[in-house]
Structures are given as structure tokens and as C-alpha cells.
Length: 156
Image (cartoon, rainbow, N blue to C red; front, side, top):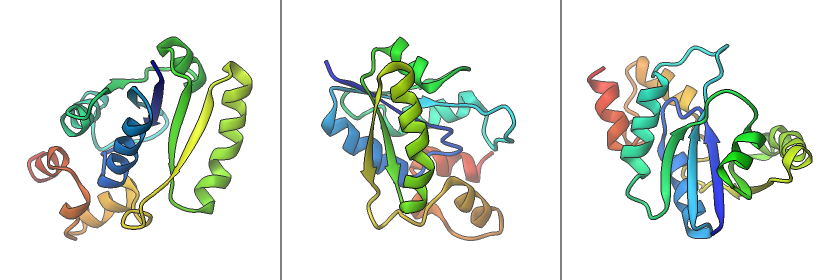
């Protein structure tokens, strides 16, 4: 069984994330969407809410599950889960430059490889931060979010 981890804070998950997760599911037998928490960041949604939105959105995809990553290193989480790869979506060369040192360190620590998937051009401009800001200022961003997120944004 080939298992991969798609890590992220997913605050909240958006259609760019979903597209990468769905493509990862076509490459691996199992994809664990690991919802991480950086305790120095302020989140709009709790960890439980973020995991629930991930599960509601991608839980119907074959072999895909959403789980909290907990504290610690991503490389260690992957080893504990028996994952041979980390899947990361790239929107631009800026993402690539940011991700390469982490991919190299993760491989050094536990041997886990990182697979980069280029984002679909419909989503290369998206980030959760941008979408939250536009939505908070009254912009219509519904087309970029799955229903599980829209439901929580409109009825907090």
C-alpha cells in the first residue's frame, strides 16, 4: 500500500487544496490530510473545525482521510503513519523556493520523499489568508470554497 500525507493548516480548506488532494488520491492508495496547528498563528477555525471541514469535503474520495497532525515534525508524523511521501501543491516558483529546504530536511530526517504537484491555473492565485480577507471585507469568494466551508463562513 502506497501512503502519502498532504499537510497543511487548512484554515480553511479551499478548492485549490481539494484539487491537489484529489490528484494525490489518484497517485497513492491512501492519502492522509494532516491538519497542522502552529501555535504562534491565530486561526479563524479551531483544529476540530478544520479537521471536520476536511473530512466533510474530501472524506468521500477513495482512500482519503483527514486527521489532526498534532505537535512535532512532519517527517516524524509521516514515519508514524507509514507514509512514504509528502504531497505539496505548488502555485509558483515562490512556493517551490520555500518548499525545497523543507523537503530536503524531511528526506534527511526520515527518508520521506516530497512529491510536488503543480496547482491547476484556476487556483494559482488562491490562499486561505487571501480568501478569508476578501470574504471578511464583503467579497464573494463562494466559488473557491467547498460547501462545508461556505456553511461555516456564513453561519459561524
